[in-house]
Amino acid sequence: MNNTGSANPSPENDALDDNIRVPVRLLIIGLALVVLALIIGSQVIGVLYAIVFPPSPPVPQNVSLLSHTTGDYGVDDWLYTSSDHVCDVVKYYQSQGALCRIAPLWCGDNRSADTTISGVGMLNQNVARCVEEGTFSIFAFRWEVVIATGSTTQEPSQFRVNREIYWTGAVPPQGQNVPGDFPTEIQ
Image (cartoon, rainbow, N blue to C red; front, side, top):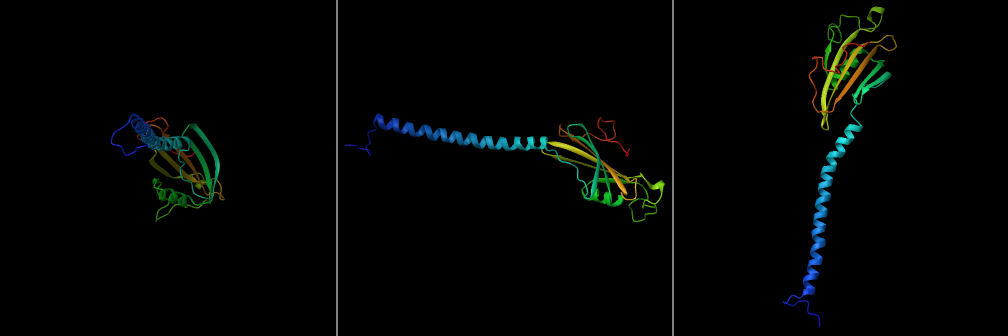
């Protein structure tokens, strides 16, 4: 007769208990390893995604790309033309959080400069320089936009967007002959 409720343990019952305990321990250890892998993996996946797909600077709608060059991975230069007025382009970048230095007599309440492109003297004039710095994942970036009047009346503005990703996570100060500093005018 089989006595499963016996107070006297038998070697068969001890072996059965050990056989049940081992898979439960392995299951708990396995679940802990899976949770740890998910925690670490989610951090690594975010960093890898940021490396493969670094953020691009914002660009207004209705622009035409004239050129794009890449010096190093994460160091890019784009040249655009737009049918928007230069001051509208400046306002767009200010709305994106950029700090803009605007040339005197341009884009203020008191526009005394002829900001329409009516004569040859108003073509290709630098109007503003906007800069934004920020972080993404564990990295940092700086982008700069130099906004100028266009070279034709159909495209009254052109702007150059420069972006640099700092893989160390820190943005170096500007204006101290740092390698990779951006040009201050459209060429």
